[in-house]
Length: 432
Image 1 (tube, rainbow, N blue to C red):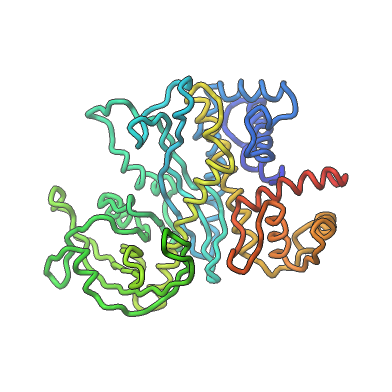
Image 2 (spheres, one colour):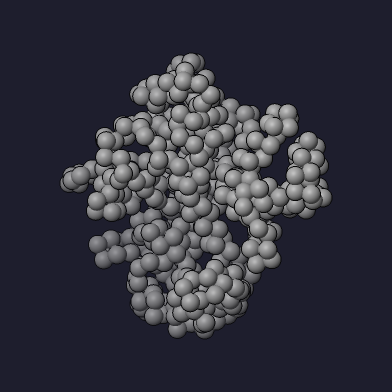
C-alpha cells in the first residue's frame, strides 16, 4: 500500500488544523504498513505512539471526518465509470466483550455483547468479464446502541435507505445490492422513488399482485418452472463435498404491495428471480430487482450481480481479521471510532489486492511489478514469472498458499501474509 494512496485519502481531512491533518496521514501510513499489529507496534518510536493516542483522544478526530475525503473520491470515480457500479450494503458489529475496561460501548446482537454497530456501503465496478474492481466506501455509519430504546428514537433499519441518500443522485449504471436484511418495504419504495436500481434477496413472504390477483410470494414463485440453468462452485459443508453444482433459474414480474399500515402507497412493479439447486434443497435464493429482465441473459446477469454481495463479507473479514480492530486496547468508545475511521478505509485496499490480481491476470508482470521485486521472487521460489497472476500466486505462496488445482485462486489473507513477508525480504536485500 503506497504512500501516495494514503496521502490522497487522508491529507484533505477537514480537521481545521494542519498539524492534525499531517498526523492523520502518518497514523494511516503506520496502520497500512502493519495492519495486523497492535497500535504501539505500528510506529517506530514511542513519540509516534504517544502522538497517535493524543490524536484519537482529540474531539476533532471523528469517524465521519476522517472518512469524508475517501467517500468523495470513491463517488467521483463511480460517476465517471462506464461499467456497472455496485453499491453493496451490509451491517455488522465490533465486539469488545473481553475488554470490560473500555467505556462508552453498548449492547450488540449478543445479549451479553459489548461493542458498537456499523453499516457499510462498499462500491465496486462490475466488468463484463464478471470480475470486480474495488473502489472503496461510499458511506459508512457507526453508532453505539443505547441500553434502553427511547420512544422518539429512529429505527436502525432506516440506515439502508439513508446510506443510498448519502451517495447522492444515482447514475443509470448504479445498482444497490443487499442481503435478506435489506428486504424492507420502506427501502424498496424509497429506492424506486429516488431512481435507484437494486437487487435484494427476499426475506419476507409478502403479498404480491399478479394479473389483479393477490398471492403469497414464496408459494407463487416456487410454482414457476425453470427457464434456464447455470453453475456454481460451492465449498464443502458438513457431509456435502465441494464442487460445481447445477442451478435452475426462473423469473416473473409482479406488483410489490405495501404493508396494510401503508395501504395508501402505490404498488411497485418488480421482478422476482428464484435460483435453486435440486441436489441441495437448502441452496435457494429469492431475489427482488427492478432491473430489466427480458431473457435468460438478463436473469443470469442479475444472479452474477448478487453473487458479488459476498465482497462485503470479505470486507468485514479484512477489517476484523486483517486489521484486527477488535484487538485494540483503547479505553474510550470515541477513540475506537476515530481509529475505525482510518482502519475502515485501509481495509478496502486489503480486499482490493485480491481483486486487482483477478482483474488483469494475463498482463505482463514487467508492466506492473518493479524489476527488483520480480528478480527477488524468482530467486526465492525458483520460478519464472511471466504474468501478473504468476506474481500474485507466488506472493500468496509466501503466505501459505499451496496452489493445488482444487484450491482455486488465493484469498486476500494469504496474499497479505505473503506481501508482509516479501517486504522483509526486500528490506534484507537492500531494495527498501
